[in-house]
Length: 265
Length: 129
Image (cartoon, rainbow over all chains, first blue to last red; front, side):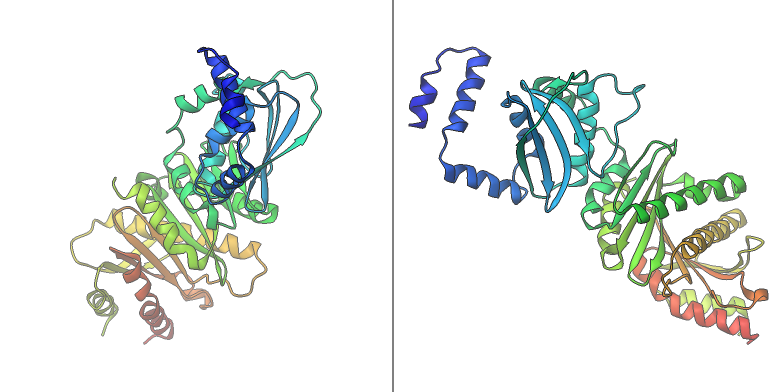
């Protein structure tokens, strides 16, 4: 039956080919869809590919909500096969307009940071009917895919460290050279503590000049205590600072993730 | 045994330990040290400056938290080549509050094994032993 319906759409061009694929997916057995969902939950499905397909196949206004575990981490409004808006619940905001010049670039950068943060974690996507207004920051799945292809390895070394340990972190803050361009995750009280600590770090270094240059010469990280069972990591690499609150029992994984990125230097 | 001898004994009894030093966090100067090889004074003083910076961040964090069980006695710094551990006595009297033991090891496990004997050394120095 599946093949029969799909075979009615004939022709060789890309449009009919995509339509054929969409109809085939719509006609697929319910058990196959359940298997797809189980694979996504288990982290065996490519998140970006899934999102691109969902955007490309959505005509009527829909809000896609992306979950990692029980946490809703992003809401995407989609209509006419275009991504209209992307709202991250707790995650990083977009880069400044000076560096990213199109909506597709902004969304791609946000999705890549999100993907790096939850690398290997299972996900699920729910769909609800939504309203749309006058949209000026939209992009197609194709435009988004092009941006994702252009910047697959962008992201700093500390971003790669973060990708390896974010799943076990209670909270984290990643700051660039300009402290106002930070990304953060976790309870507000804890991220505020980390941000305040980063401010103290910068202020102290500015006041002590050359005496403290050793931490800047090579990448390094510092282990501090915030309670008997929670450690705070401050990692520096060039102009970036990463602060992570992590349960003490996960310190070895933190060290392993950091050495994986930096020990080949 | 004098302090230089105690530092050497500490270093030689810990596999993977390359340097043990006694420093003053207030002046940021290393006063005594024992190392497997010759280390320039600038490196030693930068170790002390880094320890002072680490403890200042630990104190800032402790001031922010209500937890009574914060371990403010040690700070660990990891680089691609080495692990440094800095140890102090948080409850020390004012005249010895800036005393610290600074250790450089080739791995974190070795660094952590130094905490207890370094604390004992600081206690002895505090008591004038």
